[in-house]
Image (cartoon, rainbow, N blue to C red; front, top):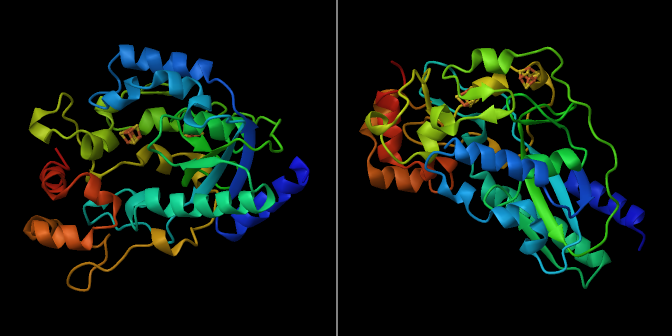
Length: 313
Ligand code: SF4
Ligand code: SF4
C-alpha cells in the first residue's frame, strides 16, 4: 500500500476514535531541543525531575526506542472542558477533571497501531504519551500539528492549547509532513506577563521549580520545604494560567471524550466541586477508591491537602 493511501486510512481512523490532529515525520535527531534541555538542566530548572537528565541520548534520537524505527506518528487528544471549574473550589487543572489521560490515550494509540498492522502486518510499533524520553512537543511541531508558543505549549491553530500529545514509533514508512506551522505569538507576551510566579523565566523557557504545576504535582516535598514559596492563586493540582491567558485558547471545541469529563465523588459532588473542607476531611481509603483512575493519584491525598492549605498566600 502506498504511504499516501495509508496516511488517509490512519488519519480517518484516528479522527473516528477522537483525535483532532495527526501527522508523521521520519525518525530524526532532536539536536536543538537536546541543547535546550541540557541548558535548562545546567540551570537546575528541572528541580527534582531527575528523569529529565537521564536517557538524553534516547531523547535526542528516538531511534533507540524501537529497533528499525523509521517513523514517528503524532496525535493530538482534545481535553477542553465544556464548563470550567468554579473558582470557589480548590482549583484542579482541566486535563485532570476526568480519568488519567496516560491510560486513555495509550488505549487509543494501540487501536491506531492495530489499524496500521491491518495494512502492514509485519509492522512493529510502540505507543507513548508523556512518560517516555521523547520531545513530544517538538515532535508534534515537526509533524505539522502546531507551533511552540512562548509559554512552551504546542499550540494548534484550530484546536488551541487544550490538547495532549500521543506518539507512535514504528518501523513502517509513512507519508511525512513537510509543512511547518508559522509561529503565531506575534508581539503577544501575555503568558510571560501573567505567570504569577515568574516560572517562564524567558520566552520558551520554564523554571519548573517556580511553576505551580510542578510544585503541586511533581515535587514530592511539602510547601514549607520548597525553595520558591509563591502565591498559587488557589491552584491545588496543576496550573494552566499561561494557557488560559493565551489568545489561542479560544480555539477548539469542548472535548467529546467522556473519559475526560468530571466524575461523581462524595455527597453527590463531582471531581471538580469538592470544597476545601470536603478535601481536608477525606480519608486515605476514600481517596484511593474514588480517584483510582484519576491523575490526582500522582500527587496523593497528603500532598493535595498540603496544597489546599497553602493554595493562597
Ligand atoms: S503553569 Fe502556571 S506557574 Fe507554570 S508557567 Fe504556566 S502560569 Fe506559570
Ligand atoms: S500568550 Fe501570547 S506569547 Fe504566550 S504562547 Fe500565547 S500567543 Fe504566544
